Amino acid sequence: MTTYPNCKINLGLRILNRRPDGYHDLETVFVPVTSLCDELEIAPANGGETRMVQEGLALDNAPADNLCLRAYNLLQAEFGLPPVTIRLHKRIPFGSGLGGGSSDAAFTLKMLNTMFALGLDDCELERRAARLGADCPFFVRNRTAYATGIGDHLQPVDLALERYRIEVAIPEGEAVSTREAYASLDLGSTHKAPTLLQSLQRPALEWRNTVINDFEATVLPAHPAIAAMKAEMYRRGAVYAAMSGSGAAVFGLFE
Image 1 (tube, one colour):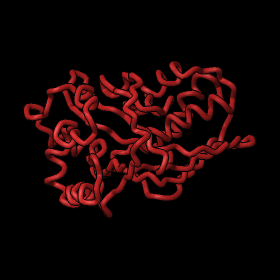
Image 2 (cartoon, one colour; image 1 turned 30 degrees about the vertical axis):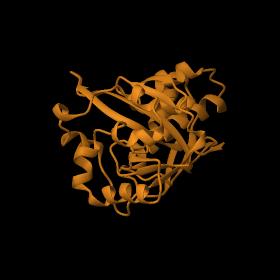
Image 3 (cartoon, rainbow, N blue to C red; image 1 turned 60 degrees about the horizontal axis):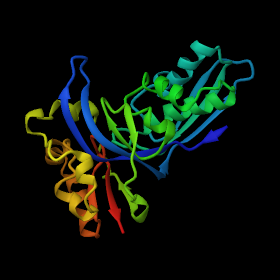
């Protein structure tokens, strides 16, 4: 079985506070983008051992630490799955803020659920996906959603985005680790009002000054190429442009 795990963008991203468990409460709107996808193939191992094969763009982890394999191990421990071979061809860059690893993990859960007729519904898949990463549950249903908590509390939302073309770009050689982005974030200065959903109810032409990604305040000065890419999106006529997640990807909405 082969599928194509897609990326996502964040429309606005507000970091509200640091939690006692070390995570951060946030609010954002996740939007699936199907123009940039990985390729994920899972096949029976025919009596051999489970094996993870990574191809395409380089990742910062060994195959044994890949989220796809962690997703398999999670279900294998619960359902006794037979061995499989997982082949992942990466096209969504690591450190881009596009959720590629989370998408791969969620798609792995969905594929195994189908292949082995496990009978898990979307809610059950989301609960398991949350154990793999904060962004993973979003990719189970893979539809535009308002996210709160650590990104795992999801509420479907319709923003009429079908009228826009979403273009995603990543400055060559740029990558931003989530750890780096959070380490430089000043929670005392992040923008909190009006609420994100209130801002998104306004016409997209007004989002530029109200739909804020809190990470931009520190990431853009430290990465001029990302700031330049955002400015280029506006120069080319984007209705709205912003960094996705903690970067380095930038997206623009075009009529």
